[in-house]
Length: 200
Image (tube, rainbow, N blue to C red; front, side, top):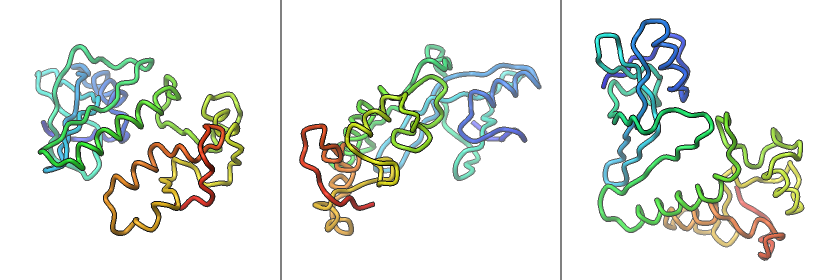
């Protein structure tokens, strides 16, 4: 379908943009999945909304990264927008490369780790940032239980342990991602050895 961003539409706010467009011009918001493809790597389905014009055709009114003229959209009546329901992206390999499958598995594992910290209405998951330093969120308590301070490097900054830093230029992507995503050694309270200096 065509992408024609509405004048006041904001990137990443497809649900709000589509509803606002329907309120202004008639029609309705349609919920489903935007399907993205990195050829030879993976497909990714992202929960998305578009505008159904009064004439019946679909139009994506949300600005997209890279300004594509068209997007692939799969309507899904079973996936309406609900701010209290987190719908993670769905990934599938495009081909048979083992590294791609491993990367997808690591992304899924990261989701398992971070999903408990998501709350309704949260646009971005700020696991370890000063924004959540009030101490009321589970992620803040976890960070403090590790004996960490806010000025230190945080997992959200893309960390790699010293043991993998020497491989940054030549190693497989997953040797970095495995440590950046899971990073069990970042927290001595987790029963892991403190890795010492962390490379960002």
